[in-house]
Length: 539
Image (cartoon, rainbow, N blue to C red; front, side):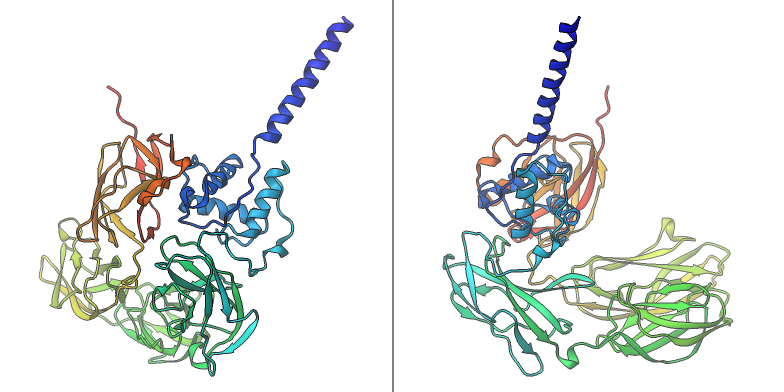
């Protein structure tokens, strides 16, 4: 009996050792020799993307199998890992993130967090890449006053091909997060040289900034980081503020306009009306100079003393000015709207109109003026008794004023004038594709899907969960693309002819579920949309 007990105890101990050994080795040692960012592929990084994705999958940060391509899902997984380990959640796998990955995975303590956030300070360590550039100016911690000084960055090309082009990225980390601008007007031709950043469209404030170069075709950082202090132009930065109102009273009739005067208003500005409740109002127009905007007090805003303030982001607000909402005196029939006054060429526009006071069916029409080219007034079912939508993709820049009229079956009408200001395409010089809309958001394998967007090319790839659905698809006009949901996808690491050992045996059978849908061209990867693949009915 004693021998049986001894045998069972020994067997149990051996089993525990085996299990612990398996757990310790379940997460492979992840020692990356390349810095990685979105768009990187195994073929460029000697398989580092797959190595990173394998670790993220093993630690439950990434829900899909490794593809060898650093897309949007991998980016989100990296950001979550960085957040859990006290690293700034940029999604860029640089020296700090690589060291954390190595220390956690190679020591068998992948579940522990990095408790030393101080190592996240930007350094001048160059990215490990086939192409490498060294800045010779501006020097580390140099001070520039944009009121008097000009920044002329210079660099020495170390080992880049003569055909290489670069894009300069200027970034700053502040309490509101990290944001980037491209201070150069376009790609910088490869060579030791200089350029003058264009800060005219960037709203800067005093502080430390860092600059680095990306290689245009790979989107990889190829230079060291040059950090310097900027004193912003006095005229370039003005706090959001209100100076006066065209009227301190208005009726909540959905028609009376009030002009707000001040500084730093933008197309994303929102008016906040406070009278016991905070009512958000989209302006009907915003002056391009940012010094005035117009809003209409909506029906149902209540009556009595109130206040008016403005915010560009819903977090930071201007000062408040007193305002009074009074009883309306308007026709029984009226048009209300959460109208969006600004649009851009090539960017999807969508705004709603509604009417009130009518007791019978009514129909919408444009009674004077015209909508911007590419937009249309879409009546709801049969055009009766429901909101209407102004919808489409603008094609021509300019200011368009028009009058919308609703008429019911008894001949009662209401009209209201609107203006839409269409700006230039913000991505006219940006080849990164975008998806604005799709004909189907769900379906079985074999379903045909049409995409509407921008910057589609003669060689555009469609990806599901970062895996390509097949051969590249050609778009003749750059705005429309059609494809069929496949039964099998493959790794995206072979896009544009780039081969790698990690690209073999990567076919994946498409199963029912929710998939991230993106498109990729040589210019980059679009922001994600989604598609739900439904089960195939069984006979």
